Image (tube, rainbow, N blue to C red; front, side, top):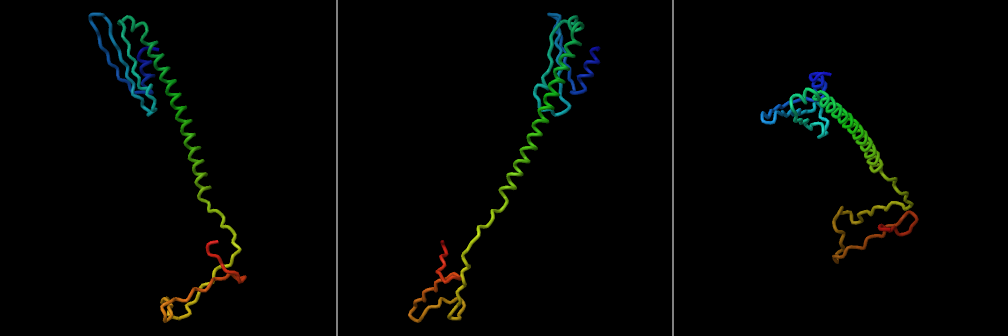
Length: 159
């Protein structure tokens, strides 16, 4: 491939910025190829710039091969990042499913225990004054009647 074909292939997965500088004293130049991924791959290695310093003749001889190697490594990283994203997404879905199942189990009401005791019978207002304190003339309230179960046994409210 030519240099521009390699740059085109590289630019299909990232927007590229190229910075060139030359040093007259040494006869060398530096080329920085800085990629900005088009997809948010969340992989820092995909934003790593390619920075090369060489003479123009060295660039003519090997720049295309270096670009090709850089593109292939980036492509491999993209594939790895995508595979990792797929694995993480699958794990997220599985985790959400397990959490939902656990929540549904926790929300199910426990079966009510069977009771054999009969309900307490309500006391009636013997004085007919609907809520007054039912005190006798001496100021003492009569003792409450003991609640009994249907069997006639005293009903234990706390037991």
